[in-house]
Length: 250
Image (cartoon, rainbow, N blue to C red; front, side):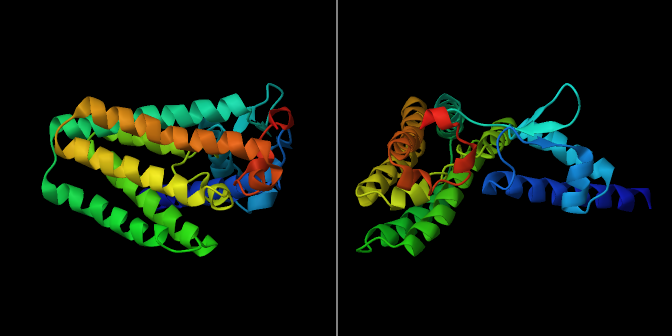
């Protein structure tokens, strides 16, 4: 019975966490807006204990900031905050790739990544590149990065990659839809695909330093997209959670 109650509490916490995260990322809760436990209970329909845990988890994700007087406030992100998060993801994914290369992987281990690349290649060949194609790319790209992390065989590294990727702008596909609207969309995809191929080759050849360097450079493609989007409000509006970017950054 106690175990069942514990599982139910976890389920309610996750439900509240997802609901509140969606409100933040959609802009329904604006940067600087205060969220109390009571307000979150009314919004999510979840009791206070799991709501309290959900708010703490969202603070750990970096979406909320605790207020000394009680409750939490929705955080805003500067351009520097976002660039630092992207750089951190690139550093962690570079470490995962280096571990994979140095610890060794089999040809069979790399097959799922190669299959992802083949499917992305089919999307890149479409002319013109459609929004549907970019939506499919988001899923395939997320799978590639997840598989790459798993090759590190390092649970601590995988956990930290998952944690930083949960930030609004730091995931591997966080800028995909903005990229889709850019004239150089195909070129961006081709560069990203080249990075993917190089890291697979480096891992297969047990070249740890090379694998690490290319994944760090790979993350900087997203950084370049951010800078471009911040100069063009049409592209900025295509970024998930764009409402969280501080106005002085644009």
